[in-house]
Length: 123
Image: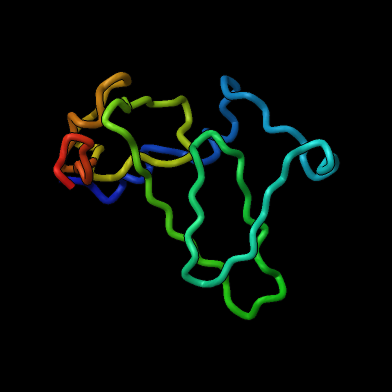
């Protein structure tokens, strides 16, 4: 059973302060030094980012509607679990009872990471 304190196994701030990760450059003061991309979008549009892309959302300060977002993570069959010192994105709560080890294939946890498509399928 998953306890009510399961979310306490990760800390956003410990992830941000993880000294083993590369420093995020000071972008705002040197915006012309970076390839910054942006798009016009409408409610219902979907933006996809690779996990290694630095992305941000300043929000629309002039809008009467608050910014809303939904994140989903997709992975290939070769992806393995890696526990970092301070994970900025928490593990799915359903993964906690499995106590995964770094290096384990995500396919070891089909109830948490279900297979949605296989290149071997007829579809």
